[in-house]
Length: 138
Image: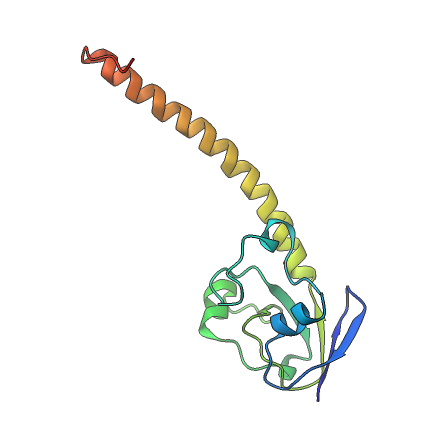
């Protein structure tokens, strides 16, 4: 059975060959998500691209899937934990997921502010249109 070392968590475990790294991490209480992505993720279906990891060596996991290529492009340094299936001993770094989580946190703050101001602007435009045609909303 291959061993997996999660570097930031200082956890080394043995796992079945063919298991994906997200399940292995989850079973051993190691988070492969950062920031708000702990709650805003697709639960391992490969749709969100938030469980980014770095794996060493590259041949200890299966080749990249089309979902990984969609989210990560041809970046040889990163993989998605939910798509990378174990085939040999591996060292896994969750640092890319933590960095991506911090980026998402900043983006969510910006989007929240934009949503509030955009909603207020839309309300006032509609309000003014109804006032202009002579049928007040209130």
